[in-house]
Image 1: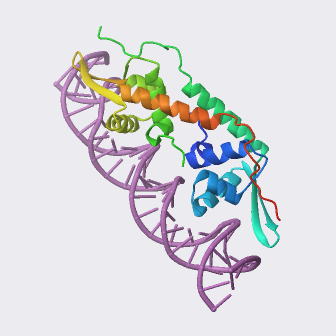
Image 2 (image 1 turned 90 degrees about the horizontal axis):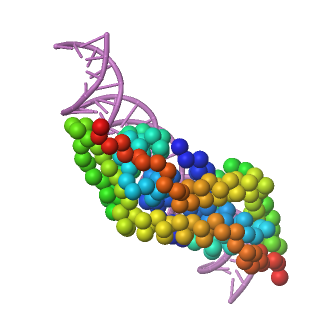
Image 3 (image 1 turned 90 degrees about the vertical axis):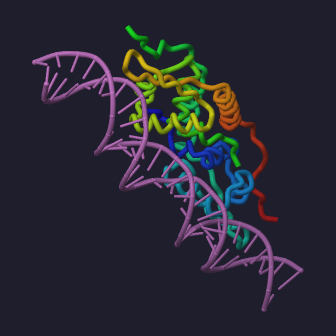
Length: 105
Length: 105
DNA sequence: CAAGACTGGTTTGTATTGCAGACTAGTATG
DNA sequence: CATACTAGTCTGCAATACAAACCAGTCTTG
């Protein structure tokens, strides 16, 4: 029925993607604080997004401490744009379409 | 974290509510065809929406055949407005907020 | 009048998944 | 040495969504 991308639609991931879309890249802790998710959850959602090809995850080090960087991939950007369009279409107060009820004959 | 109303956020129900918001009332079969849901599913979602106080369900008869009419309640309209606002805020391409990464000292 | 289709459901069973919290592991700090 | 931080993985629970089966009454038609 609706063409809403479920991977993106989930509020946690939607929040992550929206955050990433406004920033070149973000680290794990930044996302953790901004989203309010638990670590486990954030980690899982990032993996789902990575599996979907929507984010790129780069595991680096700050000195010897791990630093995980996340950024939206081109596909992720495209999917987000597409999602936004679908959502806009749905939320758009559409003009009275037609009369839904067939009254008794 | 996100203030998205889960009752409304679910795509099936979002579709139903969006349909209802553009029409004074709709019957069961109209919603069935427009949403593409199965009967059981539509029925269940309508019950959830009714329990949430977002729709009013009126069971009448067309002659001797049952006719179920559904319309958005005032609370439903308000909740939908509020949902739309939240969603707009999230989808709004926000300006570069801040630099998320703290670089090594 | 019997068979099938239509209206409008309810019930059941399955499969997914979101989520919190526990646990891991290496590094750093007091 | 004990604690805390980064970044996870794993486990287990609870909530859904969904399809499909079933139900009950009505109407249609051969």
